[in-house]
Amino acid sequence: MTLTAMLLAIATLAAGPAKNSTPIDTGAPATRACAAPARTGTFRVVATRVNSTFSRPAMLVLENINGCLEITFVTDNVAPVIIDQLHVSADTVTGSIKLDTGAAEVALQFNGATVSGSIHQGRQQWLLEGRRTS
Image 1: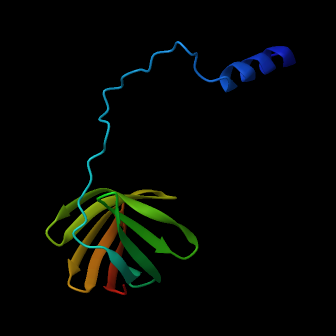
Image 2: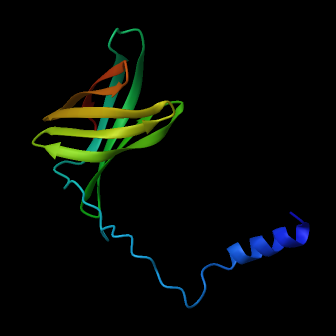
């Protein structure tokens, strides 16, 4: 591709949509469904492999964002991840997280000021135990 053609293509893309363009209806709902926050706060947890060969301190941050429950899993040496596809049933919350090695399933059980649960990714499994700090 010549330099002139490349510059023309970049200028066309950078110009954005034409003024007379019509938006495409994708059929997607305007708002996403979300789990109502039954609880919020910060929980300090320890994630331990099932065989107890490795453990790592972490935090679960439960927030009420625009009336929806948002949970963030924070640990050292890894970027924080949001637990997606939340399903809340009484004191149990399930969802999924995206790790560098792929998707993993999360299950959390709240009992007053404590939390326990697990993270499953293929054959890997970590157990979570902790308590509320705020």
